[in-house]
Amino acid sequence: MKDGRPRLDRFGTLRAFIENVLAGLTEDGASTPLVWFVLFGWADGRDGTIRGASIMRLARVTGLAENTVRAAMRKLLAEEMIVVEKPGRVPVYRMPHMRAADPSMVEG
Image (cartoon, rainbow, N blue to C red; front, side, top):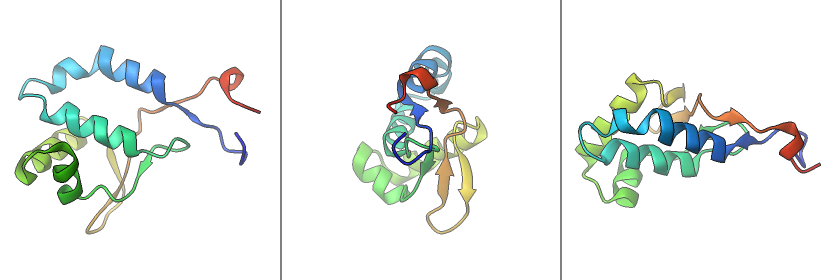
């Protein structure tokens, strides 16, 4: 917490995703969890915002077709695994389920 803002518990969020959500997102294959995982990696560790997550960039990083990425993003939005924080050509997203870190685990 060097700048005074608490960090998010990235590993707790990842564990919760694996234990509670992953199976429901794999019904149509592994593309939706893969897109979520990449977005998770790009999310700001302080507030869960994701900037620069264009369909083209996600397709390049995941190796999926752009239409497959679009479908995965629609599913993630519908399941509220991500939300649009700021609309635009390349929206700013946020992962609302990212958990706050335990204060005792944060560097002082």
